[in-house]
Each structure stands twice: as C-alpha cells, then as structure tokens.
Image (cartoon, rainbow, N blue to C red; front, side, top):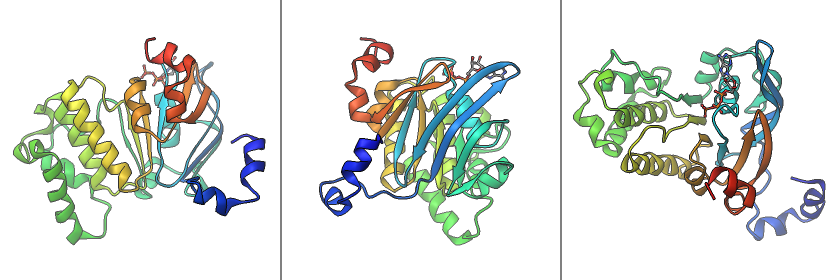
Length: 260
Ligand code: ATP
C-alpha cells in the first residue's frame, strides 16, 4: 500500500470496511528484504511480500525467477537474509519440521509424496502431528469424497500413481495436516487440462474455507484468475504487485506472462 493510500484509508476505517475494503488484519506471513544466494549467485534479491488471513496470493514469474527459492526460504529449508515472520514471529532459526507443526505446509513441485507407501498411508502421514484423532477419520473420508480416484487407489503404492494422481495425493495430504498457511509450488505443472481444473477447484475450495495460500505458478492466467492479489517476480526481484484483477489487465503482465 502506498503512503497516499494509507493516508486516504486510515482516518475512516469503518467507511472503508463498509465499502468492501477488508479490515487490516495482522498478516499470516510477512516477508521483508528477503534475499537468498546460492554460492555467489543472488537468486532472490530483497523481496517484500505479505499474506493476510484468508488471502490467496499468486506469485508468478518465468523459469529461474526465484519462486521456488522463495518458498524454500519460507519453509526454512535454506539459508536466507532479511526478515520472515510467520504468525507474528520470526522464523529465523526455526527448523522446517517445527514450522510444519505450526501449520506452515508446502506442496513442493514434484509433489514430495512417499512413493513406497500406499495412498492411504500417505494421507495419514499428513495428519501425524494432529491430536484430534477422531476427526482424522472424518477428514480422510472428506478427502476421498473430493478425490474418488484416491479412494480407488487407497491400497496402491503412491509411486505407481499417474502424475495427476500424485498431485491430488500431495494436495490431499497437505489438507489432512490442517494447514494454517499453504504454499503450493507449480500445482498445475505437467497435468492435463482436466486435472488442472480439478486441482484449481480444490485450491479455490481450500481458500474459500479460509486457508491462506501462496500459489507459485508459471501459468499466470490461471493463478491470477484464482487469486486475490499477486506478485510478479523477475530475476529475483518483485517488479509488480497488486490486486490479481489489476495484474490480469496490466499490459506488462499480459505481454510478459500471458503471451500477448
Ligand atoms: P522454475 O519456474 O523454473 O521452477 P523458479 O522461479 O522456481 O523457476 P528457482 O528454482 O527459485 O526459480 O531458481 C532461481 C535461480 O536460482 C535460478 O537461476 C536457478 O538456476 C538458481 N538455483 C536454484 N536452485 C539452485 C541450487 N540448488 N544451486 C544453485 N543455483 C540454484
């Protein structure tokens, strides 16, 4: 938000809310000046990004822009500089498994499922840290209802699933862990158009249930159509950000990412 927008909104927050402006809620994730280097190569060069409760945020950019690197920094899987706050506290020094326990869940590109476990075992692994044991069976049934193919394949090894089925399993497993922030890395990658539709239905449904989502996609059109707001990452830097609807109509976005 620019200083002038802040000045315009600040004196009359109630009026802004009545007009449909969401009230300012503490962000679930706040990133400031994030940078990451591989050896001497700067892959992420000081990005700022914020996710507020319930938001679906698209992070779009070309190959090598630094999208996956940013996600891996957020999950604590590689060294980073700058500031990352999750649920109001710094993630500096917090191991990935602890962030996962606190609900910060990533579905990586390439899915990250356990290929030598069955589909059902994978889904239960998603819930392993949960204490509400009775609810787990209910949620498992819910996932099978959403993804009938996973029910059919429940006792098969996950490694034998098709690419699209593995993506469904990765999503369903992530949802079994009751995420408080879901990071999705290229969920449409390598899927048929029908599978992409299905996965995006599930993403929109999860968002509608209030799960904050950071969606990394090369498919800018799909991502921006689903998202509330978006950020454009180019060579490790954020070059544009704003409401997804505005980015969809931005000539620079249309030329660079929508093939116009
Ligand atoms: P894509 O859409 O192709 O997955 P991306 O936006 O996710 O791209 P990153 O994977 O974050 O991009 O890569 C950002 C830059 O960092 C690229 O130049 C890449 O070559 C480099 N990079 C990524 N991982 C490593 C690594 N382990 N070691 C060295 N360089 C890396």
